[in-house]
Length: 422
Image 1 (spheres, rainbow, N blue to C red):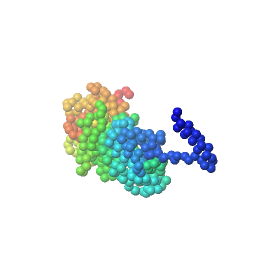
Image 2 (image 1 turned 30 degrees about the horizontal axis):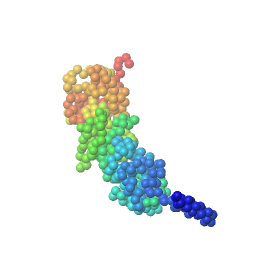
Image 3 (image 1 turned 90 degrees about the vertical axis):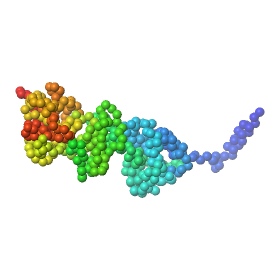
Image 4 (image 1 turned 30 degrees about the vertical axis):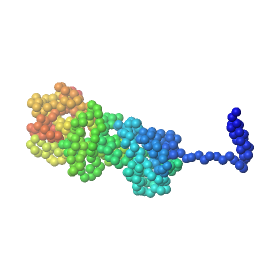
């Protein structure tokens, strides 16, 4: 017979009987959760837990520490994923990249909000610096992540819940300098950097060189890609190039230099579209007609302008005109009538423009373009042509042939040709 159980049972009764309100049963103290356990128990940090697990940091962040952890919320992680074309979930992020990002949020020691001061630099466990950019009632880091809940105590340190994921400068450098694209609802496929910031073309750059200098360069910083992460039928990797701008490189697509706009605060902003009097428009891989803005120079070497009345005359100054996507100038013929070409000369001198127009800058309307006989494209009823001797991007030699005004350039001021009887 086993006497241990009844002896133990009656012994326990004796202990209980001897206890009263003045002599309560002592309670075992509960241990505070570790940083990892705290995150596991917080629903809004579930994506952080997934990231820590994938990066293999659970054991490290469960150690004695102490550590200070900046813990991004689920919405913060989702915003990061939405900014990256290749990241649809935590599992899409390379483990080494993820580890570097997470350790950028971890510091040795317990640092409370009272320990922080403006412009203070904290060295993270990945070796890179995080800067305290605001203190007091609002605490922020690197100017992008704000503390939503601070000073949450854990057994092995302090947690500050933040509303954005901080990216280490080395990761930002690598990711930002990647040429990507997004399929936007408003503009279709648009080129962006690796963080989703919109890129732009400048109408003044029709010849393929950078014409944005001085204050322009401050508002429209040039973009240079060190890698390309784009696939798809609408994209031709062979059209990606680069130019040297005063010793610094700038990426081009189909000869058009790429820029940022300083007033685009976040991924998905398109504030530069149509800016600068219509000289800037979002960079796309599939424009059929482009806007150029440059000095008109005839085949005779003389400089011309188009007046407000649409007259081509001698003069210096830039004129807006249409080109194809490769920067080749488009013209009309003064003897044409609505949707009908009356040019009967050598087709090699004035080839017809036959690229069907489906994608144009938003300042233009696709509805103004149509297809006429022999597949030629007309703009507001004006049949469109190239000039055979325009050999380089942006050349406008045709404006003086055989005399100014016979073959004008085409732009938004070009009047519509109306058929007889209409």
